[in-house]
Image (cartoon, rainbow, N blue to C red; front, top):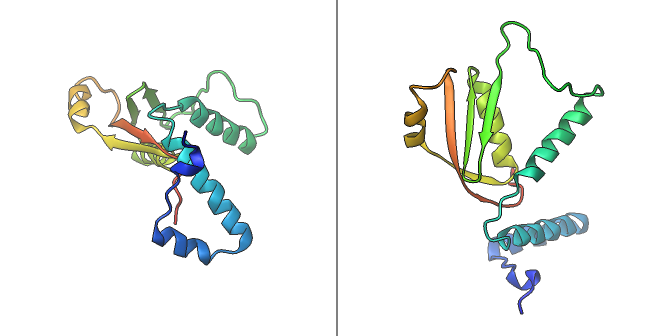
Length: 147
């Protein structure tokens, strides 16, 4: 029976990068490779609860106050709505910058997404906001490295 370690494949470019790292960076790199192998072996099970718990923790760290159950926004402030199911993510807002920020957060968290323009056309006549983006969830990997 193969273990997770047996499933790890390191190509020559990654190995030459690894050789140039300091010892502490090498350990971190090995943990990242191991985490990526675990994510690949999950065989398509996508865990959105972990993604949202990280976002909730980040919000809790950034503000000391408790998050209210409903937020009343002042006049002129745009809301963003996110709807997620097992296969799709729909992001809707009047602020394009906010829509892009949310999608980039999904990308940074390891979600591989593909924009579904055909589905957007179906919702175009019923939308109430200026911007609507629908993405199909292709897969989830470990966090994407900015390098």
